[in-house]
Length: 159
Ligand SMILES: CC(C)(COP(=O)(O)OP(=O)(O)OC[C@H]1O[C@@H](n2cnc3c(N)ncnc32)[C@H](O)[C@@H]1OP(=O)(O)O)[C@@H](O)C(=O)NCCC(=O)NCCS
Image (tube, rainbow, N blue to C red; front, side):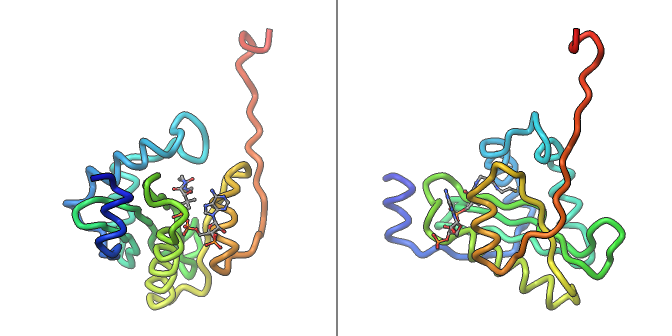
């Protein structure tokens, strides 16, 4: 049975991310993020664990039975702003995209961070990621500061 067919039979359930979900979460991220380029180069088990271990953690999985349909990873604090929540990572498995899974994950993550005292929730979106930008706008995020990564290649590469 395909994941999409399974989805029609069992509702997607959101649960707090637990250590038992880590292998699937790490694998789905590796499948969907191009870890050779910013902002995805830091995707790793320790990046996930850092959020899970935080005092005010907001990490959720969307499950279709035992299958991972998506995840969101965040916690309180963004750089030096302890009053901001950080929604750092989100993904939906390809078979579940376009069905509102990520929207539900964004809402759960933001609700947890707001309950923990966040005055705002911050997320960064890579400029070409139109799906992610649309997802965030649809869920109440407004565009703020843009930061462009300037890269200077090594002299040999320039020549
Ligand atoms: C971005 C992503 C998480 C969206 O997941 P999703 O489960 O398909 O999103 P939803 O079904 O909840 O869609 C919510 C909104 O997002 C927008 N959206 C989602 N996919 C889109 C797409 N491919 N193109 C344009 N807009 C899209 C739409 O505005 C949608 O609103 P709608 O319900 O009115 O159509 C998913 O495409 C993904 O996993 N991408 C790869 C990983 C990634 O880039 N993550 C973000 C960086 S950490």
